[in-house]
Length: 159
Image (cartoon, rainbow, N blue to C red; front, side, top):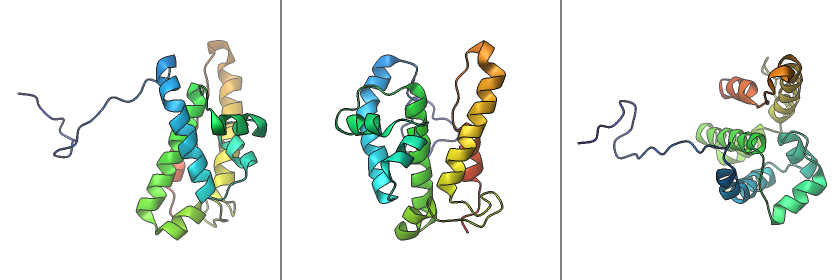
């Protein structure tokens, strides 16, 4: 008899987290990830430049190519998209749809954002964090992700 993990909800089947370091996994997920990101960007009314910023500064021309045929995204790009999807989902759990879709792009007076829109804060913070992280870990060849700001944004009040 199989045992269910103590934290599992009854009837919920847990799957393993996709290994984004594997090329075949990234190939399989890239098109649906781009489709999802572009759908969220449309709901948030983001210009393509901002979508590129969310993906770490991807040029607009590359985004337009990926819009029709995603090819294979990098591990960092898929990770960034997963954070955006998680934030989108959390906002729709916490807020009515019309507020949830505006929350990321509206100025926010919470001390965390300092009057900035959460989207601007996220992009700026990720960029600064990556610069510091890359500078301190160049010798190890480490990469950079949005982990730090994604955690802080998920804990921020919604007012």
